Amino acid sequence: MADTPPFPDFDHATVETVKHRIRSLERDEVQGLLDHERAHSSRMPVIEVLRTRLAELDDGATPSGGDQREAREGGTSHGSPVSPDGAAQPGPPDRHGLRQVTWGG
Image (cartoon, rainbow, N blue to C red):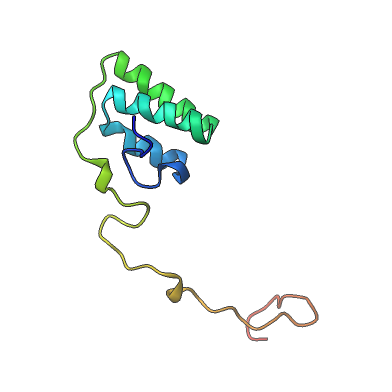
């Protein structure tokens, strides 16, 4: 396998992201990811996910459809424009270090 993984930011992807994205890969691509992971990061949870998927493929599982090279990291399925700019602003500081127990100050 080339030094470029089959989907963007593999080296920083979460285990859940890896689980999702490897479903469409052929056996040789998963093996390439395993080799890449062992050579670069050696994240044991990712290695275990890749080993499990290799075993599934060896037992007759077939890759799902789709091209993971174009998949986005995170976000929502409908393209929600969520950003930190929409986060709530912090409230006033607590009085004397104690949070108010009732509403209204």
